Image 1 (cartoon, rainbow, N blue to C red):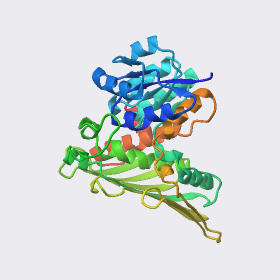
Image 2: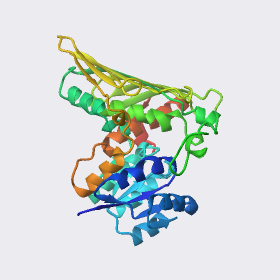
Image 3: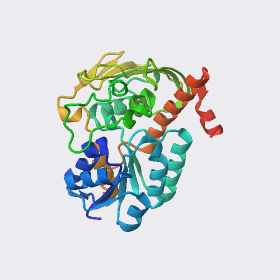
Image 4: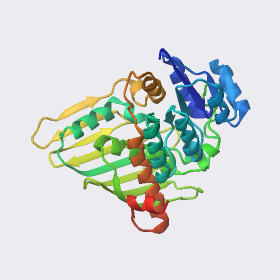
Length: 351
């Protein structure tokens, strides 16, 4: 294969800001077709980026186009069904986060991809940063010993978008800006906590065993403040806290602290990107990210999909790790509703 032909499903804000330009910038990728239920929106994106074909039906696009992969950048609730159809057609997929809304749906996709021999790349952008990859390398290599405690804080302005739908006035977007449904259909858990849950699971290379979650809506119709206690499968305990009420013009917090039997690590992913390893026997290590383009490499997942399709690179944000984030968030919502802890096994028993 000389060129990766990637179709894009969903032509809203993030597809036109990140995924389509990421593919177009790739020297060995091309975007032959876009698909969106809103054909006019897809047509505007196609005109802007010089894409030849536009569809309002995925099955029609799959039947008519010769593709190697598909980006699924539609609304959260549609990820499962659209991705399953693309995987069943034998294609690699990039699914925007969250991979799916529920853990059983995620498991179905992973099993389908294994049968088809295809890869699921998930748009957890922080996995592509040097800080996250170095942290994972150090921890899985035993630099802090056995992981004992994971503490994550992710504070953003996401819920301000529900409070103030016009918050993006004055922002420049290449084609489309956000619409109200991007944020009002789901709260902090689905839209933001999924980032930090995936980052924690990625860095320690471990998934959840049980979750006890608390959520507050404040005055908006979705969860705005989430606090989780997590037990991981290898015994570590974790706290994941996320809030969406920061001012729109303030830099998000995305902080991770991991304590182990031989040392601890702190990572600031957003405000002053820095990783610091503290070994109890000395020999600290620091890695600062001075390249602004690597603070949040928003186009990296789409480029990775093209490289995976070409056989040039491994999947750097695989569905298997994204599934841990899906499990954490799914269990958190169920726990907050029930008032008690939820084991991950329960998610599959009640599917």
